[in-house]
Length: 129
Image 1 (cartoon, rainbow, N blue to C red):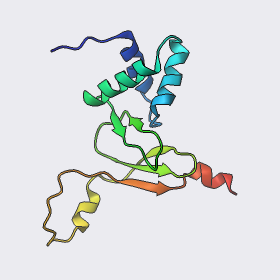
Image 2 (cartoon, one colour; image 1 turned 45 degrees about the vertical axis):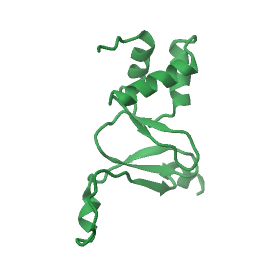
Image 3 (cartoon, rainbow, N blue to C red; image 1 turned 180 degrees about the vertical axis):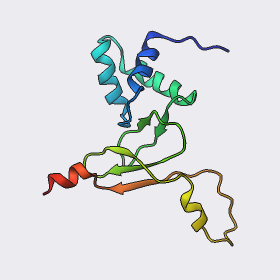
Image 4 (cartoon, helix red, strand yellow; image 1 turned 135 degrees about the vertical axis):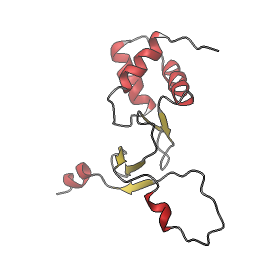
């Protein structure tokens, strides 16, 4: 079944092009309203869910009770979460690099994994200086 594209979905896709900030749904909603003041929050949420389900973007699940973030980079990679400002950023670490450190006798087959680093981003650290 072919799913038709809508102007609202195209707008949300456009907002993700080149956007590596890992925005929340509310941040995407605010950006979308600048271009289409009549777009509803529900429309944005439905279209984000569609884009996640179709594999066009990734959902980064809520961290520490905060909102989900979304990522235009769909290839496997890791993230860092700043505990002060809430920003999520990519971590330039080779994917699966840590798997070789697992004990050889581990009676377990890893099928998938996620890694989220928690700490303070450079911007927040510099504010304290």
